[in-house]
Image (tube, rainbow, N blue to C red; front, side, top):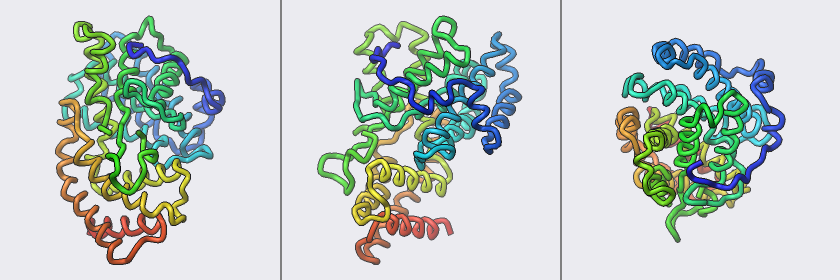
Length: 354
C-alpha cells in the first residue's frame, strides 16, 4: 500500500456471514440480481481483450469479487438487510459496473485500456462503498469509510484468487481508486441550512489533489509506470462514482433525494420530524447547487468524453429545480418536516419533466 494506512477495520458481521463466493451465491439465490446477465454480456463484449490478455481467468475472478461485494452490500446496507441506505446500497454497484463503465467504453473505445484496467474499474465499482458506518476521520484526505472499504476489498480479492504477488497492479489501483473517491462535501463555515456533520465530510473528490498526496509519499512516483497507471485509473474511477450528474435528469434528481434520505437517517433525524425540514431544504437546494456547480468536476479525459455532455444538459434543469423548490416552499409557508420538503421537490420535478 503506497498510502500506508494502519490496518484498523476488521471484518464485521456481514463479512463473517458471507466469507466467500459460495455464501454470496446462496444469499442471492432467488434475489433478482442481474449479475449473471451483466457478466455474460461482459464476456461476450470483451472477448477480444480476454483472448489477447493471456489471462483467461482474470474476468472470472473479477466476477467472483463483484458478486461477493454485491452480496455483502445488499446484506449490510441494501435490500437483504436491516440497515437500509437509500443511496449506498447494492444498486450503486450496478450503476457503475454496468451503465457507467459501458458509457466510458462507448466514448473511448474498448481498446483504450487493457482487460486488467477494465477489471480494476469493475472491482472499484463493487468495493468502494462497502463500508458506510465508520466513525468519520480523514487521514491524508482519505475517509474512514474508504479506508475500511480498501481493507475489505483486499480481503475479497484474496478470497477470489488474487494475490499481491501475482496481481500487484490491481491491488495498487484498488487502493488509489477507492481512496481518491473520498468526497469532501462540507458546506462552507456558516453557510447553508444543514450541518457539516450531516455530510460525508470541502473540496470535492480527493482525486483532484491525489497527485499532491502521492508527492508527499514518494516524490518520484511518476517514474513508476504502475503507479502512473493506477493514478490514471483513480481519476477515471472518481468520474464513474460521481457521474450521476450526467444521468437523465429525472434519475439525477432521484439520486439527490436518495442521498438526502440517507443523510437524514445517518444524522438520526426522522423525516417526519420538524427538525428535518431545514436540513432537507438546504440539501435539496443550496447543497445540490453547490455540489453540481462548485464541487463536482471530471478529472479524466475518459470521464469527460463519457459524461461531460450529459452534465451540461442537466445544468439549466438543476437551476430551475432548485429555484422552483424554493419558490414552492415560499408560497406554501414554512415546511412542517422533511417529508413535506421532499413532496415539494417531487412536485417541482414533475412540473419540469412535463
